[in-house]
Image 1 (cartoon, rainbow, N blue to C red):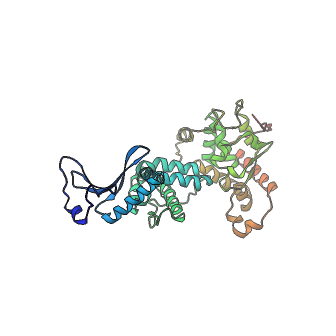
Image 2 (cartoon, rainbow, N blue to C red; image 1 turned 135 degrees about the vertical axis):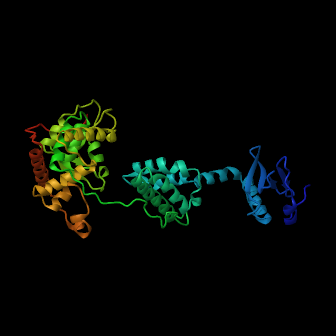
Image 3 (cartoon, rainbow, N blue to C red; image 1 turned 60 degrees about the vertical axis):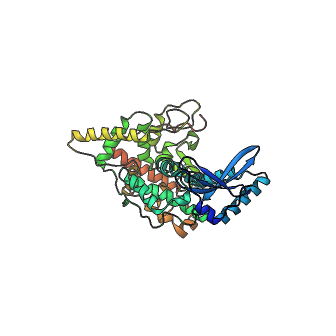
Length: 403
């Protein structure tokens, strides 16, 4: 029977340049493994379900002989209970990775957030390819800074979004006692954020309206409805026929950013745009090309719109400064104010929950503002018709209900 190891024999053991050495610790099942390079580690050999198995206990430089023996005893006791300690370790290692933490986070927390899809895309695009296989507890502040440095050069504001996503991830892990601290602590957003105040001027609105009219289906009407309603991109893009009842478009709480249900009055101008869209059999989505999913390809459609607007502006020797589709929402709000609509009514039209309706006011203010909101959208449509020179006339509301 092999002799029991001592601290002295462990220290004196030499590597074999040609092969790995495994020196048994008596009959305990523990082995001192010495690689040809001289690296030393502890391992336990055992049989499970008739097969020979090995469990690496740890490096000999950090795990003492006494600790290795204790770990070996615990592993063999697990085998006696019918458990495979090597398989359990592999499962734990997988559960400790950043990829596993992200999956856990998205199930327990992220899925409750309306921006879960975008958060998941951020992780899959910018985080998991770099950190996915690493242990979450090994991620340090310098790793966060290095990750952001690799993003900020190509996408400055996306680096801020990535930091926000991983900060939420690690703060959540700390709150669940999965990690002792967040590596994002003290890390500042790499790109200064500026509040946008861009709205389209009357001349730009004319260019936009004309370019959208030439854009074809489904994006031409979609762009115009964005401006007419002031609704968010995802809300308009995901509009469904069952949501529309005559001149009222009702969004459930699950469809809005604020988590509050919202009713939008559809003016004749908006109904005219919706009436241009063909009804695809079996499809509830209004803005769709497949009939099964909402419209996609926003970036390409916006780029084509920009080119059309620039070409028209160039004819008059003018240019169009950069703008975003979200600026249409701000342009709508500004237009309502210009048409004499009170700020609280505009906030209701935009489904804002802060501002005039924040805090205690939001708790006790229960007036629906239905009539005032309808009047606001009508005033804006009238002003817009005057700017563009296009009046919709009388149109028939689209048919609601099932496709």
